[in-house]
Image (cartoon, rainbow, N blue to C red; front, side, top):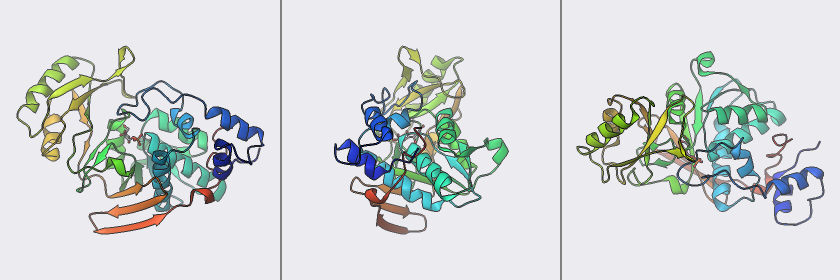
Length: 317
Ligand code: 5RP
């Protein structure tokens, strides 16, 4: 079956010519699927099979355009022979999709280390060879999304519940590149609730200890909540729970990260300090900025969406 280009897909979504194939009809129908519960909100815990693909089948909103162009630009950092950490979330899903297209159409040879079972499923589905971190041992590059980033490239991650694997994989990489739409940029971290992964045993005790610890920290709020998946606590890929810390402002992210990880029951927190090297920021009009703050370099370009073909190629076959 021939591939369906983004141009055709856009035409299809807007009811214009080019919507004549079975594939086009199938994707058009898929566009009517509801998004995964919580997709687009602060928490993206859900049980959907490959919710990223469902989301990609909806018409491209400015925010999706921004995520897509950031992901597309980041693929320019990837070379054949690399071992690449594959992030989790809606922006990272665009990256996986773009890399899959390069594997299928351009002969790109990479081994991907996914940061969640969701990403592993998606990567396999689009044709990327998946290996474990233990098989890879060390990676050339990790590309992932973020919930917030600041001017020092400190991040809050874990909105999609994958912070533990994400942090391990990114730390085991020569370079971490974050892909994001501009809304993720903040002056001070903390508006997005900080996820903290805790083991289920005694999680309420860990929660109390965290709340007591927060009293002495440079933060504006101290409320914590157990992340839920419907009526049950959310369970991570490692079988743990997540506490979301509603801090509003984190004055000293480095200190907070160190202190949180000392608390019994805490497995890891969503602050990524000194891990990210480069941020690729997408905009709704197709502009994309690459910011390497540590090198003091910034570059702006534009990705013409109508020139991007086959992005939905085999993935939905
Ligand atoms: C998952 C993450 C994601 O990278 C973060 O939530 C951003 O997701 P999205 O790209 O969907 O906004 O940390 O644990």
